[in-house]
Length: 159
Length: 445
Image (tube, rainbow over all chains, first blue to last red; front, side):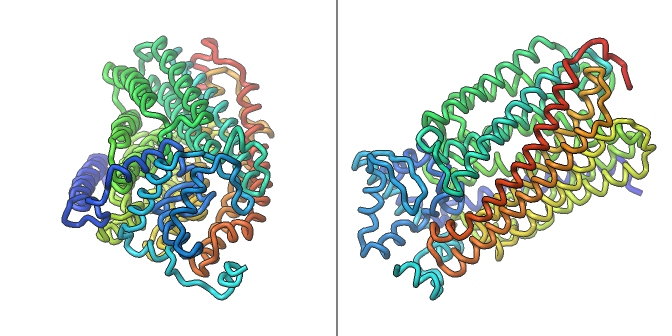
């Protein structure tokens, strides 16, 4: 039968070994050789866009990379998606939403009217474009424009 | 109660109750917004309500854990706390940081990183606060006549929780790296060190309530927390499947997070077996309800429902949908909320001297809140699965899907009302116990 001493050794040993492996995998997956994010494309604009994204808690309604609050649309492939919907004018549509001073209520669900400047809105779009290019191990397809569209959904979109 | 300084726990628990009520209120604001009644949008938009809801959860649970530590550590260490005054300073500063953060959320002042929305300057205050707390607990333990496994595991959990807050404060330009280290905090807290805290509290309660030999309970405590870390640390990988890092996490995260339910299963079997072995003489049946309830519901909520969407093949479609909210609600409720309510139910009669063990109100609180929360979980689950199929499989537009599933939020609100009734009854019971008193020393011990 297991003794208390053996149980403690199992706890301490198991924790140490798994944590060391975890650190090793972390170093590996953040190394340049296996980068999937096009890290070199992170411009000053993208960084400013990320800051705007965070300082306004956009994640409190939207999701990005599948992370957020599930109240408003997933924005990982938002530029592509709106380009398809608005004949290549996706970026302009996003900017007009972000710059809107008045109440904004897409499909009955309210969004805060942030009234950003043109430069701020461009930064956020740059952030979205960088996000949209990341290799997400298949998730990009699930939320992207080339996902499988059913006849039912097509009918609704065409309406 | 054996030591006067244990009374400080009462005020941490009282703060927990207050913040819990606020958390639920903001939950309702979000629930109503989802069925179209977002009349408060101009003052409390959804992102504010959401940040308040999740941050208050973290703060009330932390306050509960701290209260639990202030109650348990003196008893386990067989001495008074090193300073009661500083413990009150720590309580007040914790409440202040919480209030300032929550008020700030209403004025667009936050970091906007899921679960870690508290703005940076307040982060430093949190660190100071937690250091003060740890200083008090660890010094008391250091000067102790005896150092039990229960108190060591509990303190280790609290210490690691403090250390793991730090990676969340590192600044990164890349959203991916940012997210990567955010999970070091969030995942390694809730699926790692918080389970140590839960295990420590559970072990203390089982020793007190079942009368089973400490050596037996503490041996199994080591096995359980061992299983937790063995699966939970590398299980962090399930957050890394689809955020833009290497595919190796699909394998590592998939295997280890699939093992995570084992730790919760062990915890449930452990609690039920200790209860069976025990003398069943302790009169505080309500505390026993909450203790066994916590072990069992956490297995279902954290273990089984977590497993339901943790495999990469499933998570590819459920990632970023309401399925996560389904798992999140029952997991936090079972594993952490219920264990805090268990230690409160156990310690309150000891601190106040009022033995309200067998009240109908107390039982109603237990059943209503649990059935209500299970109903909420089912509502989230149905909404989440429908969302996955309509949006991810059939390619429907996000908002079209939201309209289709809004009916499930009516069910959610009804169940949340039942849940809230249970919580209100629990708080009435809390209030009826009155304030802690030195006259309660040694009663029922």
